Amino acid sequence: MLFENANKNLLKIDSALIKGNVSERTICAALMLHLSKSLKKTPFHKYFTDVEYNRNKNGIVKTIIDENEVITTITCDLIVHSRGSYTQQDNLIALEMKKSNRKKTEKQKR
Image (cartoon, one colour):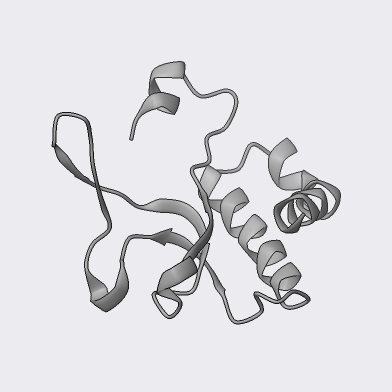
């Protein structure tokens, strides 16, 4: 429900950004503000919303290991998390945002 409410507010309040064909980062930042505001009214009010976040606890760069054991650094376009404070449930939402008019190959990139 948290994401749905924030997304609804984004579409209602900031639709001019989408219609204006602004960058993904701008839309992502607007969504971050709506998510942050929505968080304040939940049990997760101590969590943070960050754009382009790439760290784990203790400042270690976030990575994933694929099926071939290749390590890839990751940066979430938008993440709702505790910044490592609550290790049992650090990441609540992690989003990769791509505009619908982007090429399919660009949408598939990690």
